Each structure stands twice: as C-alpha cells, then as structure tokens.
Image (tube, rainbow, N blue to C red):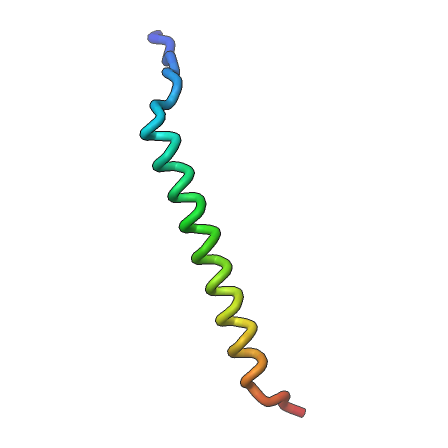
Amino acid sequence: MAAIVSKPPSPADIERERRLAEALRDNLRKRKAQSRDAKAETPVKD
C-alpha cells in the first residue's frame, strides 16, 4: 500500500480558497437579505 503524503498548499491555492470562502459568505449574506426583504413585503396571513 502506498502512503499518501499531503504536500503543503501553495500560496496560490491558499489565496484561491480564501477568495472562494469570501465569495460564498458574501453570496449567503445577500441571499439572507433577499429572504428578509421578501418576508417583510409579504403581508401576514391570518
């Protein structure tokens, strides 16, 4: 069996991961804001 040796991530990989995580957080923030706005616009059904 061959042992898998994990090499340390390159600076480019770290930067890519950081940007991806930042974009995902931003996207989630926007979606939550849209959801809040949609709920505020919808009249309450009784």
